[in-house]
Image (cartoon, rainbow, N blue to C red):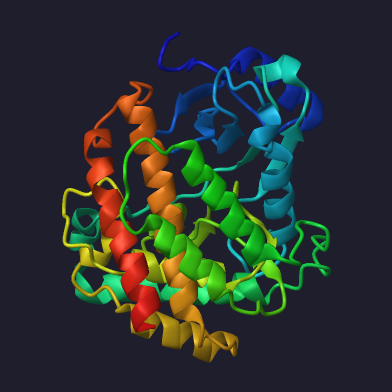
Length: 340
């Protein structure tokens, strides 16, 4: 297939569907390209020469298309679009697998930059970097302020027992990719289980909220939150814990995990926590638990990637170094819990 006809995107069939469901939307011949960077679902940029859209679909050859549920992603951005939470405008959801071979959805293209490394942030300078990261906190407060019932998301998840289920789920994930000794990881898992905090009222949780999952415009404001595949109704402080975890510099500039915390001007974890607390009015006294849980969850995810790498199932840059990051994450998790 040519660059304009990437695998998994049949432009002719897509054009027929768009003309039928959204007559007049497309005005010229369609071109499409794969947007690199997604870790699971595939994202394509689509254009007719005048307008641009984005197509999201599950990975090619994935047996369980429902495991990457397009309907959930489309539903949450459709529910949030009328609110103050910045998300792309949804165009349509297609569950007919005859069109692209899997369910998919189309949304408007949003102009902006997902910052993944300290080097990418460097040209902004310290002050603009600081503003961008603080707006990340403010936007998270907006998301957690949405009343799920008011936007039709009252049944979007099962908030009761959310933290307990999360801890069990990631414990099972760990067991599924165990092939080496990881000192401290079972201790961290057990300690988290013993200190489970009481969750506040449930909110729409993004599940993977960080700087490279938002698009930042030229004015340093957040234009859109992307990658809603982990979203659910649950404990909002899990999003805060993950954000705090990503704002801790690891001192590993070549890390395959986001290095934005190393950028000059990046606010400290304490400042982010205090800003979230002040703007949301929430009790953040248990934030060290949520942050330690984020370190644990990332350690498990990275170990899974390392495990697949050792089996020869992942190719690409940086995968060879993921294994050495895992003990660092375990260590940070244990330290965070102990120091509170």
